[in-house]
Length: 564
Image (cartoon, rainbow, N blue to C red; front, top):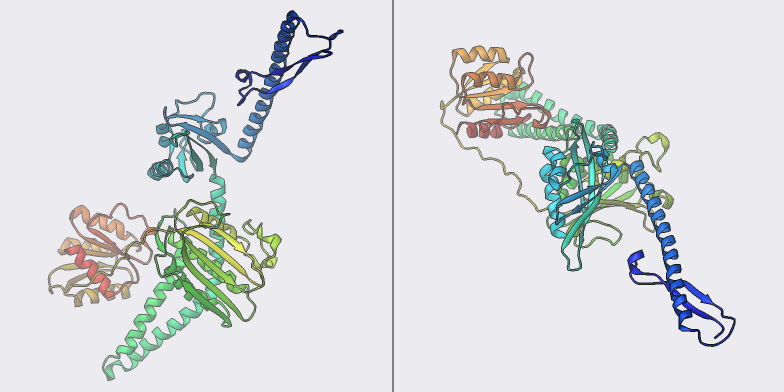
């Protein structure tokens, strides 16, 4: 034999590999041919062993250096984007946090807390704690991905908003063992989104103004014209029920328009509820038609089954309005605006959302379309293919935030030919029965005395007239101070008061009356919505709230409910 060689094989315990592997070959070329002596073979084995140790040591150092570099890069990346990572070991309930996650929560990573799940939940804002815990439990139960927005409270009391995401890790038998993920501080981003949303609301109101003004002028023409006719000729003939019906209908339509404008001005923390997306589409289409050219034809194709989602009603109305108006304005002269809504059980493959039934909303126009290169940047703020002076570059960025917030997905498609399709998917929610109107049951006349307080003379007279015809004895006061004087001289069983009045407000009047008569039923009325006013100090089982305008039937039914 002219050459004797032996492979240098790694040992699994040193490198942690799945199996031993060849690191190299150790070879010796003897000066003579023939089989080597056993002592020579033993010497070769020892040399191979020493070579293996040297090579493995070098590989370990290189691997450790590579891991150290990766750790530094990961830490830098987490710091740059504000992302902290965590791992939760389910068997021991022990949490491991990255340095950035300690920073997000306001703690010094050099002094780690004894991290358990209870500690994490204790730092979540009390109002968000139940929702965060329920989302985590659902992820563990269903083995699906986890994503949740919540507020946290730092040790110094500062409130931050974070977005958490993660996934369950299971053993070979499918049992959950770990839960790993990350947390992103989105406080500043959310503030920017709020400002963008407010900007869009103002723009939306401006765009609404033309159509709304047209509607209001028509309604005011009906109301003032019919009222003048009744005043001029009412004494000469029996009441004209047709004219009165026109006035009533015009008033109800005006109230509906006002309600929509109030929805657009909503700035408080968004509350989720079950929203009928089909109803939102139908109502919004009626508004949008006023702002579109008459040459634009609207085609509707709505599913007949449940069309409910869980979201914020005002946000969804604003989203739908802007998408419909954008689509309508994209068409020149004649055009077709197609709106469809259906239920689907499987999402397109490129959409990464949790499984389940979804509502698919498609809004399609046959207008100028969107360039292919623009589609990838369409949701960036101020990115627009409209003229720069148009000032509407915020809308789609806010639309994307709205849809994502409620667990959905939005995309824009540019099919072959002219036009654009806005396609949105929302998780479908179980439908809840709508509130049925409370029927009015007749009351015995003279059964109760009611004190009515309102600084608007016409409103006070109207409420007094309705209650008097309902069989009640009515006392009146122009303001809270006068109401307190009346309460000292007269007994009454119910207080009906406006809230926003000069001097003492209606809610403070209610507290003053209840200081004397603890069980006094109180009906608060206002031109504002209940969400706009803090009434927590007076609202209880003996208090109701009505937004103006209201009908006589609703007023009498509410009074009856309070007294009974």
